[in-house]
Image 1 (tube, helix red, strand yellow):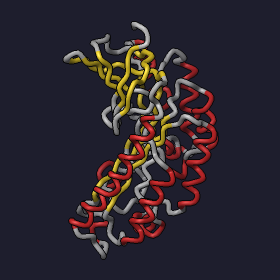
Image 2: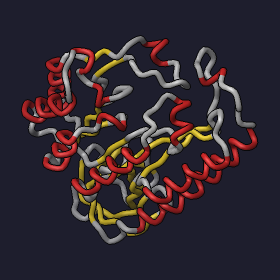
Image 3: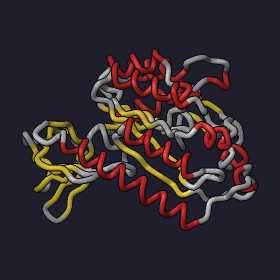
Length: 293
């Protein structure tokens, strides 16, 4: 569910502000009523999205408008099972939002913060927040307040001016932080953007090799993190059935983005049920239904 449209950021690689215009928050009462209608229709999970959900209300002069919106939703629709947030800007994840996520189980402990890179100079060329130490501190605060939080991010490799040393700093950061989920994109210049005209464009073969190396490192991290869940029981939203197998998602799995829990047997879809994790793959888990839905 969109809570805002457009974007007022000035990232050098992005055309969205030019295409969609500045950030515009939807009225909170309209969002609450839409959530209420969906939940009454049987929807188990609501995913709130925007180019930056943490900017909600800024265009109306509100500070920290996202936690206030979440409180209104939870107050009006207390029987909502799962509420997921997508696309938080690294500089706008407030203490109030962290504490709300830590104390309200309906708000899933899943934070997607597209960082784009971890080298300060590359981030400056991207016109993104370049204080990597501040980002480290934010991730530490999230994990301290919500020990089971799933952290997701995305990075761009091969951005103009990304040297071997800058790419190595990105790899070191990924090894240090160990994100639960990580997506990567090979830089592709968008016509009309500042990034398309930057000097020091990275050759395509170098971009592709850097992408391969980054994803290989993350694959090992993901496998190790998944293996830690073997033997545990996680709630899973059952979403699909076929050929003797049911597909489910846990709080760690955003729809159409992350992995699956693969469950032998064909179980009723649309239910959230406890699943005992029996084995782990790089991105997916295997599990068995603990109780009949």
